[in-house]
Length: 232
Length: 232
Image (cartoon, rainbow over all chains, first blue to last red; front, top):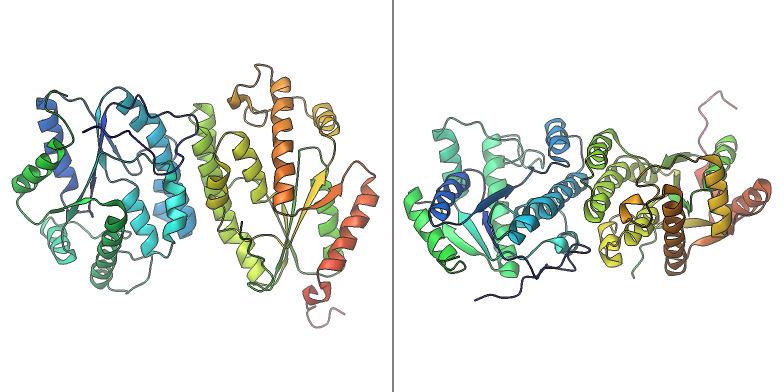
């Protein structure tokens, strides 16, 4: 089934959507939910089937990725400023990576999309209508999958891998608690609640991410097959 | 379009000046600032320029020609948000008269000329309070062009609107671009009820009018700086 491709709002000035023949597939989920692993596995699978794959993600634009990383290190920007900085990063990738790749018929795998950006801002007090307006430039994906992993499980994975908790992923900037553990659990729970709210609006597919990678991959593949025909 | 007046929200007052390059607004706002300072009022001046972090990204964007109307708009809004939350809003909360040499309307005019949907840009900037007074320095387009082109012949790429492909000649492009900005300002002036100041008159006459309007519309006595003991 091929629905005409649309933007959430008016989209990007001067961009028509008629020739965007590729597929835009989004994988959402918190850090530690297995996104990168799954994207690597899916890429292999898609390429084996003869699809050309392009990757995009957050903080990867040529335009502002460097400055954004710099700003986050210093934690000097207000939530609103940071939010707009991310929106700039997103818009740059949308125009310079996603749209050209779709025009060339690629499968674009997005390691998170506007939903993570919106959820993070909402947890920090931004209102949904403002965010929806900002991101009305975004293209509606063919498929959005959300890897669901409970905060406790995420925490276990962090500790198991000997990784330190990330300041932002623990919501330490919000000031829930001075305990990293408490703050992490609270922040990730808030994020999940917000994702549920967004799901009601945008209707993404939730995939249980608390299983062995292969089982998760099989689920994701089934969903992808429903939007990509096997012969391209 | 709902407008939030500042009056009850914060103790300070926000006075914005807008107008084309060459309209004399910077001279007028400078004189206004001197008058308020010398009369012992709490006054804070802010202008439309870029913060370090955004400047470096904008520089790269301009050099590599990465900026599109959308990212141009977003990156400047990011910068504005930073200045707004760091300077403008705190000073308003602290009960100052804040003088802004260009405010969000500069972006609204410029971005819509570049093709961004008007509602999108208005929404983007909706977090920024509406000024208590917006002085719009208006003069015939011809006069503004003569003033600016006589004084500063080397026009920068975006300043001349070269990215719009209006003309390969920077001066010609600047003229067309300013003409469109002029139109956009006129529309904004009606929609947002700017206080129009005819600026093709002697500096002193204009300043007198501006000061008079300020005295009429703002209870200046409230903004007297408390002098430290021993200063009287």
